[in-house]
Image (cartoon, rainbow, N blue to C red; front, side, top):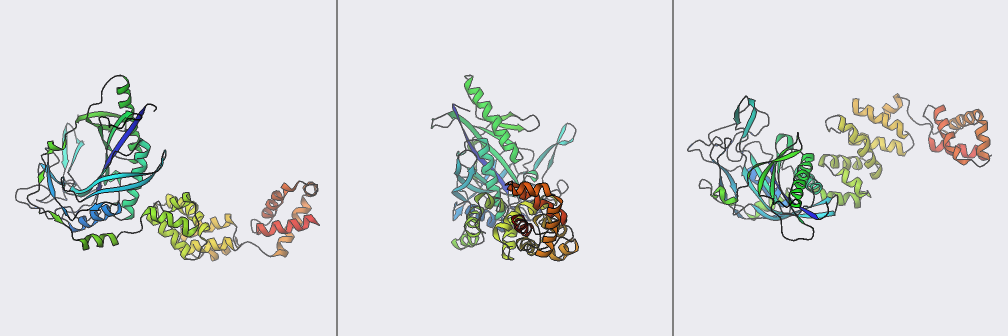
Length: 475
């Protein structure tokens, strides 16, 4: 919208992929009956003491390193105090003044501005609260404390995003990095990735930030873009009509695609943060941090660049193949099994991903079998169409591609004598077209090749058929 610039900063809460909670041994499994995965620690019973989860700390440090943050040798747990039905202790253990890590960045492809590097101000660890359920019983709110104490990292991004579409692109890139590194499954439907957005608008060219509103309750990547668009438009309309934006928390309603105020936004001092007396500062040795650094896999951006240089792929193809770690690993396994790199890329991106899409994201054709299919096409044994049928058979029932091709009668005939017989039949049956071709209408070659393929029930090698046709038509 002309005249106004949008400024967005995202705070992302990510559930760490651990089997037990942040400060106790209760399970983190999703979908258990309400209040069955609880103990005195996560219920906040008097006298119960928290003990940090070592695996959660490893994953949090890995996330910080993957995002280029400085990991601090000492960080401090703090109590964030507020009263809410799903917070049994009356406070949440988080970090405030001395977080685990600061000053990272994430580069992503903006639909409007190309490659953008957004700053990450801080990354800290905290525990989750429970969940209030308003739809279980009429006129009352039920509380499920299974999530209470589940380990989270909060990633606070700087005010560097300039549109709702950029916010979505940033989040998808962040999700990709966290999934690649095994830090989280980032499933928004299960609540393992949640987003709060700070949104403000300012006149184009202004450097001072406008008053921001926080938008909460966004539970899908598509809704992130919609919610922020609604909030941006609300603020611009307000400013243009002479009103002022009030700092407050807005809830997004996806059914009506609208935002409504929840409460005026607390400042951090309203939470009365103070160091957690039951936990000493978290001290990390340089060896521990180095160990987490070496546990990181090749990250998506690096893998994308390598696919372009090593396999001669276009940037777009490399982006599709590295979108998930599973697909990238599968593609490389197909190439290692002997397939031509570019042909393998086309097969994985078309047949491979289409089949996986229909079967719960499972890549059902073993890499060696796909490499064999690619080789059969390259060697002229199978036409591309026939190879697609063989692919479908291998995906559904397994087996050896060559054996399946022979059983289905799909092996291309590359015997010149046999192909010449079909060519002779076709030319004999289409004398008028032969005359037109000889009078300079050379585009009829495609018609003749098609007729030979039809006469041979798809078995003729099309390149050989064209060669034989050209010889016969020239005589």
